[in-house]
Image (cartoon, rainbow, N blue to C red):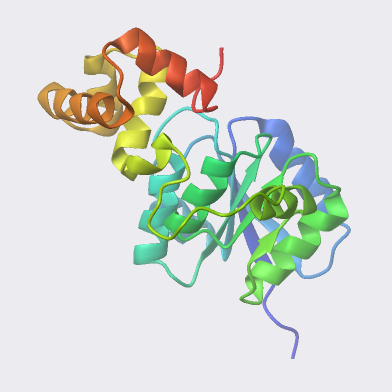
Length: 219
């Protein structure tokens, strides 16, 4: 009996990514592109609609925070496995992906054959990461921090605070951030105050600089 194919939902705001995946999957038995979405908005519904078994998701795109979307997916649909697929390979992205419940982290610079192998591995219940990500996660070899010691100030922030900081770094106002995260402006003010205290900064300009320096936002 032929096993069911691996159905991949591509969540990326660039249509050419899905086009490239479709062309590659057409040459690969047992894998097919189930659909594409341009943001993580309504991810659970999209998974149900497309009957996807693997979600391949970009990080830097408009709409809801992808890490929160993956965490929500892992909570409500643990049978569907998510892979982060990004042009940016950064320590805090890797940490957030693992914490959110992602099953893999790939670089958009990976060869197509490596992407296919990773999708198959994740569908089989294995965690997958590209060589670049694995090398980054392993680190250059200095002494590891003691347990319970944050590696950076960013590690002091909660996932929600990181979301808020990322949006601040993109230049959004408190009202725009509140609308994006479906929270009240007063709630955003509380998060911002907590972020500033934890990071030891005194104004919004310093927050933007920190977000840019840590790769949470791009100029």
